[in-house]
Image 1: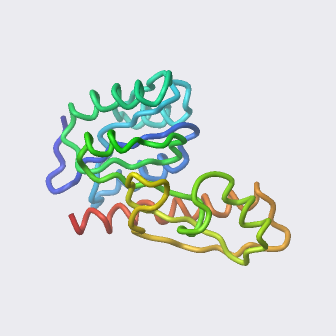
Image 2: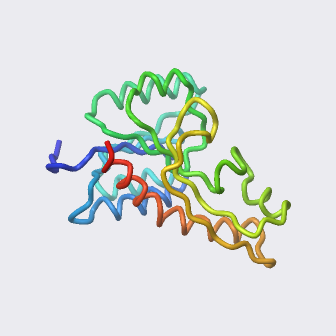
Length: 192
């Protein structure tokens, strides 16, 4: 395996198009980047994000999702083969069990499309619009056994305009996610 002195090795879990993955790959390719993406795993073998990983010559695996415990068992087998410092969830649409978190034993970060602790779980944009919130945003947080409840690493907010619908808000928030995820990883790794 290539060795980047001083760089931390991270793995990324995705479920779909991999737009956050793309942004993280771009960041990891910078000369002075603090991290290297060693591995990408998806619970969907058809995930478009796996194609980005292949194009960027990053080892990747699509695990056919049968159920949570099967996916977790198979992915842990793969993760254990790598000397990893961190696992990042980037548009990964499954909830990891406490058992997985304990067995992986390294920190796990997640990106969430709301200003946590507001709107944990799904349909965050719709909920923010329905509640007539003036702002929403994105949060990078540490994963623990409670859904979207871990320590917040970084947040950024964006204004919700009267014209915004779920689609336009999703676009705005995604842009912020791409911006803050690499920064949050660097901030987190600097304190390890």
